[in-house]
Image (cartoon, rainbow, N blue to C red; front, side, top):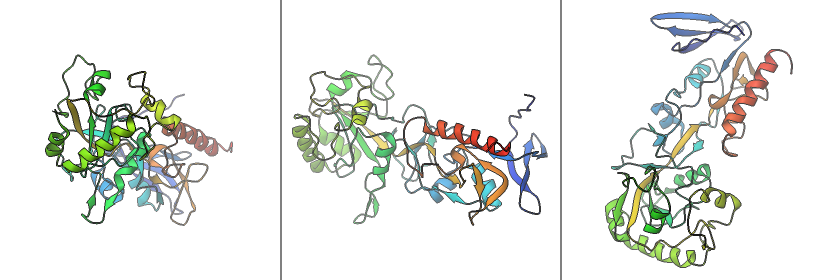
Length: 344
């Protein structure tokens, strides 16, 4: 349609007139700074801020250690809009995605980009596996959706003054390991990935990861008794259709009463650090129903629209399901342009 697409030309700020209307942008085109006039409006679609460590530290409610959001998500849209008075919302939440993690664990480490470690639930929900905290206790339904499970990391221990569930440890037995490849293994013919620690006993795993050994052994003993009956009395794993849909991706024994629940009792055992991650932050520029940016008084900033993960999520930080970010981004982009053209 005759549009000019300029790659490697980052926009650095917004240009406003005396009335505060956005009329263009400042961009860096190679060594040259250019001003680009907006004939109708500016639409920001710059993504989240997963790769801006300062913004993550300032805004996220719990730490983020792994993300598969594209490396260009550095909060540019939020920063530029904030500079002209745009309001922000949901800056403390994200599209949570728990992730495996290589040793050693550094609680102060910045989030790194990865497409292998994040677990959409297929690994975590598999029968014959659990996720425990440093006291050896399970703290969530392992078969819950990734965004839901990720929220469980936020429990702050008031006695020891720490995030009790960070880092967590994923543990599975040999039955699990033989039922399908471990996360990052690719196929059963490949070596066990480096991030897994293999041991013949749970106590060895506890000692290796600094977990309370007695707590872990007691937890697994109680878990196994319940798992043998197909019932998880603590977190109701497998009682929701969503649990079964997530866990069904991993093949296991057909005779199980609960497809996502089995005792953890066949050595050797395999364990890996398991930490909070994200497939995108979902906080940003506050908008109205037409994707128009709002200032801190709730007033429309004329000429400025925001869509996708640079805008505050239309679901208020809740994840409705896979693909909803694409859906919301596409729909709100369509709404924005129809508004600009006077069709709404």
